Image (tube, rainbow, N blue to C red; front, side, top):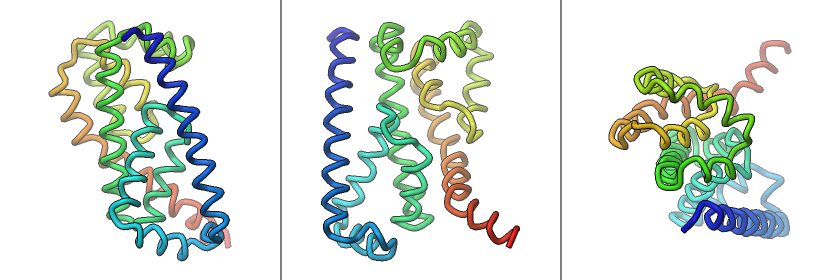
Length: 198
């Protein structure tokens, strides 16, 4: 399968996901559960494993195909499932999505990346891959810090000589801190500011 065919599949998947999200949102709106967080939490809880799988799949998709801003879906996980389970489900979804990005880049190379990210973004970060040791260090730091474009860097990592084993452990050990910090800041940051200035 060529990068162009992969891009067509991604476009189709994007349309399908958007339509599915719109349909689910309309359905939830008709049920009247979107206006009350506690009611929404109870609804998701009664779905059990299906609700968890739905959310994890959404997280995987938003890493590979950034339809939903990652910050929104990450905060939603904490709101819907609580701080600990929300963190766990965010972690699993984002990690799996990161692995997929790495393998897509490793398999299809630069031609695919030109479809997934802008040329400006590619040019901005590709220079960091010229020195493998330096890139490995910068990549590790970027994954730990909650401010770097992780999805782009995971794609770029797939273009380098970084082994999947090293990539795997950087993601597994580095992502939890980032996800936890990002989740908590989005969930409680606004409340903290309100309390600070009230």
